[in-house]
Length: 143
Ligand code: AMP
Ligand code: ZN
Image (cartoon, rainbow, N blue to C red; front, side):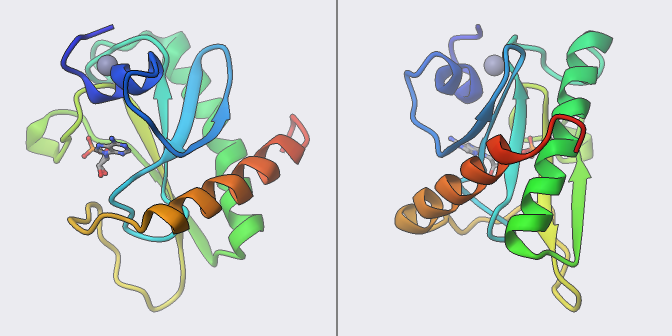
């Protein structure tokens, strides 16, 4: 736990989130500045700044869950494609220094961006989290 880390605050429930999925090692919630509806973040439960600090096991767990969440957003939102990526260091565009993976539904013809400054609508985020959560927990483990 890092006191001034917003993702640690979410994990310890000092800050709220639009939760989608949880395992012993990871938590998935919606990005509150979504670049597309259904933009998810998968975070490690332990605080690691980036790929250089995270353990291979922690990174593997995030990778494992990223396949589940990619299927979830593709199926639930009928996305044409899904972006899965993560950034390390300010120079690479990282803005929250707690290891995480972005999973972003993408549709043909839409402009591809990595960050948005527009906050999502709270009611829409809540409804989206409920949809994706129901879908994620209904997926088979090997999907
Ligand atoms: P990165 O730039 O890869 O470090 O991504 C950090 C992401 O976290 C950005 O896309 C932000 O919009 C998102 N973000 C920041 N604060 C919160 C929060 N409280 N809840 C959910 N997402 C957040
Ligand atoms: Zn943290």
